[in-house]
Amino acid sequence: MCTAVMSLQTHWEIIDVLTELYVLLDTLAAVPPNLLRLPPADTGTHPPDVFNAEVASAAGFSSEAVKVLSALPYLVGSFQIAPSTATMDYCDQDADEGVFEVSREMMYDGNLAPPSAIQLTASEGGYGCIYIYDTENGNMYPWTPMDDGPSADDEDGDIDYFHIQPQSPREALQPLIDKFRGLHYIIVLLDRDTNHQLFEETLNVGVTENFTEDELRRWVGTEYYRYWHISRELKDIYVDCGWEVEYVEQPRFRREEFLERRRRYLSSAERLATGQSEGG
Image (cartoon, rainbow, N blue to C red; front, side, top):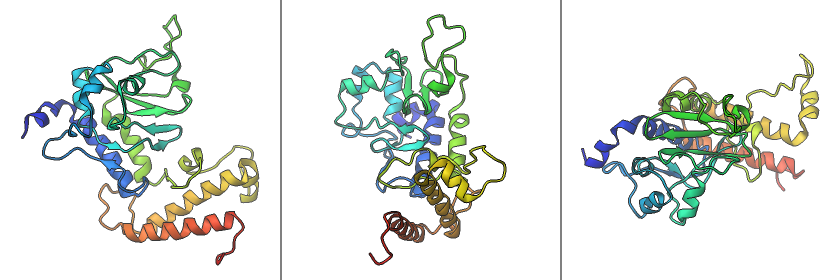
């Protein structure tokens, strides 16, 4: 075993669970093709032409954080994986020191996270969850700024994650993995903002206990309902193509068949939405 891999043993849990999540998204075809970026198996770390360790270090990350950053899996660019929650990509070769410094900023107050902290996700407007991994203690802090607010004993009212109950990486990310594996979360690859409806298994607006489909459509809006309905139809296609929600391995999943059926369904749904006929 090479020295680099040996030195990362204390961080194997975060590497393992994040890899499981990203590989799952790739298997589900929930992210565009060729977006998954894993470090080479023989070294366990991304090469210098992929991850710029010098720039990360100059931006203030600790040596341990830089080491972990070089070994994490990534999705190229930024991709939404939960409501108002997007992945972070530290392998962007165009990123300079300033970009890395911005990735260390905590929401609202502009203060920097500790040098040992890695923000794995970004939050849109404070409504999404920022998953923070501390390379010093190996803990994960799932922080949703708008929900968690400042610490009760923080006299300055600074909004930060320091009062969040720490979890292991597996504890923090397993619920998200379960959401995708169980097909509770369905990502629809469409060129428009379909944020929250893709992450809702049911649309219960709480107006009445027994509502019709037409009433539900009126309450949430036609477009919102349409994209939510698309996500539920895709769940049925996953299951028809052999996806088994209770299993980690998916040997029966006919991925190529799913891709073709999804393509046809989304194409048909788009045509119907624009009022075009099947042949138009």
